[in-house]
View 1: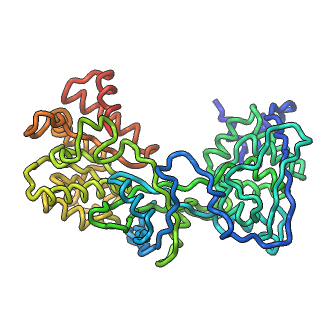
View 2: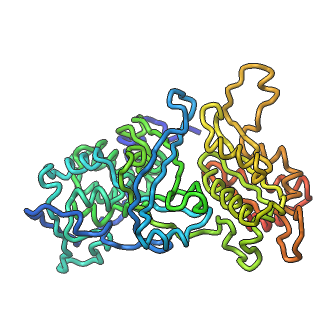
View 3: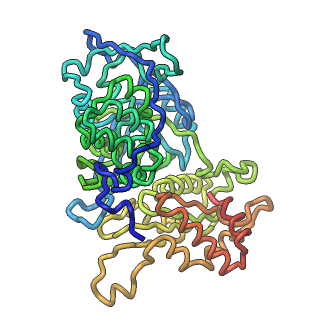
Length: 496
């Protein structure tokens, strides 16, 4: 069967079948009730709180903290090209004299994350302003929005948009212009497109008949609103359309890679950089991720704004069954931790917390197994927290460190003979029997009320790892313990 999408189709041109469709079924054109006026006064950014102080789900306290950057450095060796997503450390200092700092630190624990407030890039703002026909001088002027009650509809000014604000503030801090456009947005953009061919193509992409091409050339290609506007130069949307139809720019969450028992008011993070290059699929300019690209530009003493994320069950101790595991039990419970790439970050915090509790206890009387499976593409080029992990092993805090390497530099038979597992799933399989014993049986049971079995944690790229990891875990349980598919699922859903 011939693939209809490959007959010359692309972002700018539909397939022959779609191009000849005379009755496109498109979404209803949204009615805009918003109107705006450009003022003469400059917008004063200090006069408003970030996004108007409007809250969003997933925050613990909602308190915004200003922190100072103390370090932002490469982990991956920059001269190497085999690392597809180079990693960097970012360290920030919270204000010690701010009461909010101590409130947040009291609530923050190993495994928790912080949201980073970040702006859209200057390049993307410039492109958007040019398409909106706004001069650089007008970019920072007050924009006053209002609702036209004479029109039908339920439009309102979003709570996260200050009124007034400037177009620069709106594009920089409020609207997610990096996100791929939705079908309703494409329908609205088509209405603001002068060139008939460009308008037709936008209508095709948002139509029912063009759903496959929309998925392939818009969603899966990862093009942004800016990419789309560059590809369709006659499209000139209005400011009110942007306010009404572009989603809110939300902060990104990063897990803390340290514990307060050692670091105090300092927080450490690790982030990766995936560079996207211009391509025939519609990407118009080179860039990194919206937040990680901004992180890369941070310099020492720069100020960043962060918000504590609401804790999930991925915590030590976990938030589920709180009465079953007490703080004093942490040093006596076996742990199995799986963390490829930046997924290792929370486990560094786990191990630092355990080290602190062991020292507080005065003696390491709970000698239990703690296994960490850590994956990297190449350890000679990228080894996150190398010295710390080795120290944890030497101190007995970490009893087993299993390294998994997907693209090792091997060129001799001797090296091949001692090669590491390729992926963390392979590492699990190679120690499957041992893993099952730790998961299903307590190594020590000095207290009658202690947990029976290890806690299993996995952190990493959900899309790339999750499905195959749980399938691997199920295979191990079936092979070494005789679990049925149903009992595998029942057990796995209780893992963290």
